[in-house]
Length: 374
Image 1 (tube, rainbow, N blue to C red):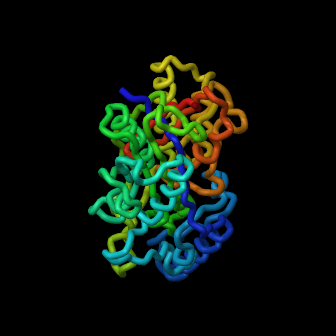
Image 2 (cartoon, rainbow, N blue to C red):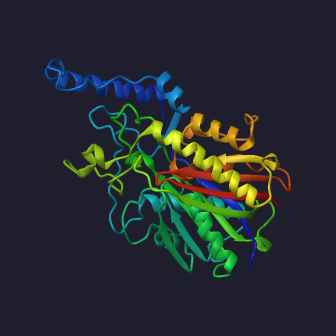
Image 3 (tube, rainbow, N blue to C red):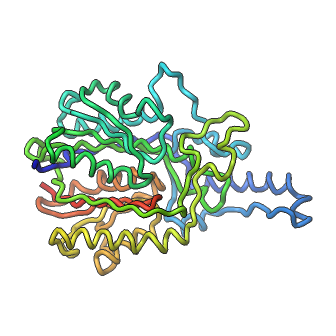
């Protein structure tokens, strides 16, 4: 059995951003249009008026202040309220593959590796722009990587499950190194016209290079101590569409039930203890006390949820820096969130420091990765 290390990470961040101020202005304009259009039905009690949103509501509900998106023009147009993503031709590189190549190039440079050093590509993301050919194989081709590639989806836990899959292949000797990418175009499956969730998501892509510990350069290296995955079926977070929404009139993405939806209060109540127990049990089984953990890189879904999980795991309120949040700048980026936090807040840890990368979401699913700074 080989030891496995995360030798580097990379992040692709879209240039366009939407602040809460911009988002609230667009949503409230949409609400006013809808309420004016349905004024008679509202007066007769046949329809409920669309409530207005506010910056205070968004910040209190989530801790989010801004988000990066691939297209803000369509999102901020009250007559459209979704990103306008051009459907690419079959002879063009796909949107997700393009993002993944950018993040992967960053990660490979940090790891001091070339595509020739990589044996396989895993594309782990919550929504894929097509069923096949696999996005991972397209990324493999674009980078010139020999070997194999495959896609996987465990919603917001896709990245940690992807790390588990890659680590298992490297441990067993079936691969020497794996590139795992997480292109998340969350803006395309979000219902921007729903006040309860219109602020939640942003777009981004992360990449992780995993290889045998003895081969990894020490600069950014974290050895993987142990990985663990858990799933439990729940309908409280659901997306029936499955692929990126298109802009054709009458497309099924115009149906509310075909886009992201969740029972937020139920999710909070059920997921917090599930994640906390998972992390604590994982640490206990590895003979590691919670007090030995220097950092928690959690899924970036909701600040209050993360704060409570951190408190339950550590047995106290996390000190500044122990549980970094990137929600305020990126919003929820599904599987990529915990990897962004790890990428931005890990280099300062000393040799021997322990940490946990943990993501959780629809399914329910939870993935836990215990790492030690080399």
